[in-house]
Length: 400
Image: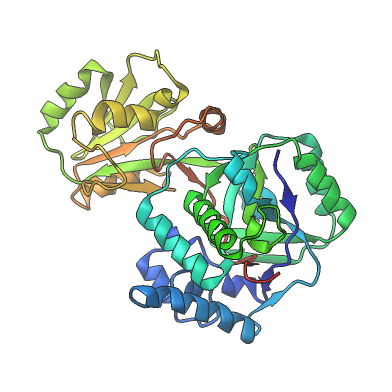
């Protein structure tokens, strides 16, 4: 159900120096540190400047990388295997092009709405620079034949093998047309689900629409911009962490808040910071005190309604705290990737916020089920970890 394709991308000569985390999780402090290095991808994905100058500088940075041979283009159409390894967790997937027509047709399945401002920013960025440098992380339902073929490709010597951000990063390249054709056949009856990168995917689709309108060519015309740069992994090869919430100020007292939630939750006072152990169990730290919230009514109309992020939104954030749109409300922010509840507690005890909400991670099967039915999950529902590097593969959209 999805058409995959090999790419002729630009690849960094020194990936350890060049590659970065995705642009949307880089702190200002890290950004400033990275910008001391003229050979870092940061100059492309988070360029300096104001207004349109930002996007012009992105294009300049990309051209500079090519001119100074910081990146070099592959000669043969290729697909890649990308693996991240650590002592505690490892995962791997394919890097390749996936037809954006499949995105339009719903075979690349979404589970979140995009926001206008970041979508406009990423669209302006890609239109100005003519390159996709960040991977859209997608998953397919575990397929033994695909996973076996991945292992066969990995028998070759890796193209890259380096350490960064606490993980070893390995990249294998496959150029054999027969192997690529076999992979195409295996994905022909698959659909893939966007795990991370909804705005990158949507901006690539917008770029394609612009190209189709300007050129007047047929939708089936072969061109680099017809394909989405995607990291495609088996859904048994991922780790999802919770995307937790922090409320800056409660509009009512601690006691009144706890009374308000009694109708929907059994509330248990806890001596120490803790992580929830199962679905429909929520941990909160309110002004330094920890409570376990157990959902009382577990008869849900939809799979979406059964998610703890949805229960939190429907039963607490909107009716009690008046946070109707968590994407834009200034009284809430999100924390992903932290697993130590003692560290979570510091957002309240050290940083002066009133409430930390610690959620149980969402199951990938729930995500797929909701997406299959056209449902939409609350924003910031999942934190996929570790993040895949940006800059390993740069998909040039302007070349034919």
